[in-house]
Image (cartoon, rainbow, N blue to C red; front, side, top):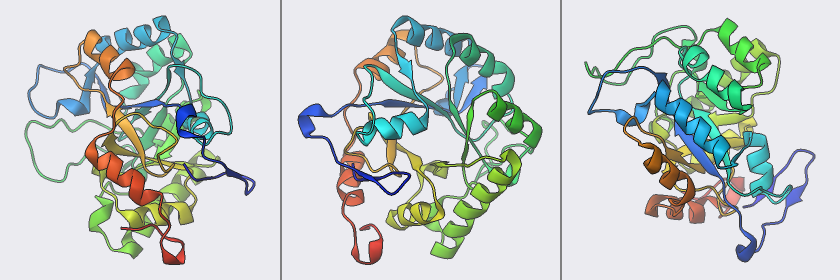
Length: 279
């Protein structure tokens, strides 16, 4: 991983034999839901979530902030065994009651990615689908409360549009306006980004770097390692149907990168002329 760190220093990429990994877990909405067949990766039953967090504690897993994760992957600080980060996409209001108390019980931190232009509104999907719930999103007061409770607030852009489909100027606006609005609301830096729908391209990574993001997570599957660009971090999706043994398997065994992730590891590591990234 070629990492530019605060203060202008550049961390050396560790040798392959010394590579560590972090499981960045991807959640969406936590709550109570009727049995479902479609869109299961967008939901996690809150009772299962509580059992999952209890399992992390029992296994001695170290839940890191994304700042700690990036520093560890860059070789600035050592990564502990069974290191992981918890991320929650979209910023659902139900997080306050369905997930936060459990995280606080175990002293776990997390990052919640919010859509800056939709605070307090209901979730709007790209296409109408009666099987998709339209839950309320976190409002400004709730975001401030989460920030005060030690939960990191990240950007999920301004309007949740797939970035790779947008012109560069539109991408920049989505990335910069959301960060500016959230920083103004919280009175603190917003350094972490999540690409809506997992949609991004090489230009997106370059623009995210220019705007000032320190990390960005994707929907690419696998454990994060020093081979990953900090603005192209893979995750492991947690689904409605995950049993506890299946959850443990994803956490402890399922580390291998998908072909798409292997491709991005090559592309994102190669600087293009003009300081961008190769497409």
